[in-house]
Amino acid sequence: MEFKRSSGVLLHPTSFPGPDGIGDLGPEAFKWIDFLAESHCHLWQILPLGPTGYGDSPYQCFSAFAGNPYLISPALLMDSDLLTRVDLADRPQFKAGSVDFGPVIEWKLKLLDRAFEHFKSSAAAPIRKEYAAFCKKNQQWLDDFALFMAIKENQGGVSWDNWPAELRSRKAEALKKFAKEHADAIEKHKLRQFLFYQQWDNVRAYAHEKEIQIIGDIPIFIAYDSADAWSHPELFYLDETGKPTVVAGVPPDYFSPTGQLWGNPLYRWDEHKKQNFSWWVERFRSVLKTVDIVRLDHFRGFAGYWEIPFGMPTAEVGRWVKGPGQDFFNAIKQQLGDLPIIAEDLGAITPDVVQLRD
Image (cartoon, rainbow, N blue to C red):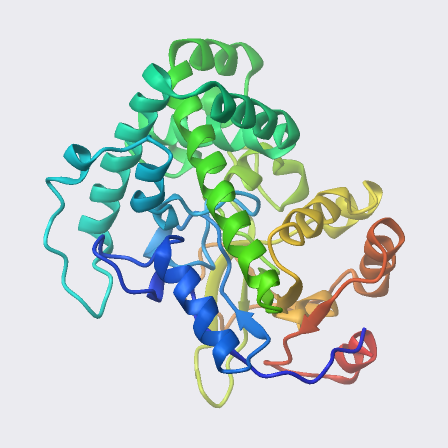
């Protein structure tokens, strides 16, 4: 697909100014869109919007489908009567210019817990109806994600491979028992997703009013400690205990003599192909509900990727493995049509990568 030549700016929402220690989807997001429009920019590029995990990186998220609750605007929650001025009265004094994730996360989660209590006790009928519709529409990923996050909280935040065996391996009776005993915790995470997407949809709609398209980002690999790996272990190279057998990275080069050891689990592409790449189809479908154009990070990995045995201290030991190639993109196109994709071209760009891109 060809794109009209346009100018734009990359700015992740975490970078907006604001009083809560991190940028959010409140008034400053709309001011930013106004600035882009006044500057005659028609593109706004962002990083992945998922719920960040290890290292607070948007490229290591707890889900490929969920949104980041830290981006939810407290100001807009006040407008929705889910927070009060009293709830915000104990706001810490955050430093300007950078995000100190520890205190910010503690503060944001405290506010979101308060919003959940207000929702349970006094939310108006219209927002309850919207919430129920959201949960039904997104059930395919939302149920597993909310359950994953509730168990993670219950287990002190440890990675899912360190959970009790019956929860780690998704034994039906154990999950049913946990869900019954922790219904509020699960519901809390569903509400956070509703609030995130409600606010983001309004931001995107305003961008469209100003004739601005949003460029999003799909990292080829997902985080190991994610609802996706936990709920679909058959799609990844994992052993019987759920631990990876091989992981992602890139080999040594001029800039990195030991390579880059990313540590993401690698896909069983043969299994994805058997399922007509259905997980990936849903991933694209989900992302394209939130952005207008998609940048595919590490595009070369679809042609071939560097496979590193799990446990290696660096990326020096590994091998090139053929990726899903044209079969992948044919399946995506067959089910979703022509997609607005930008192929990231960093890394070892060999002729097979160029051929796949073109």
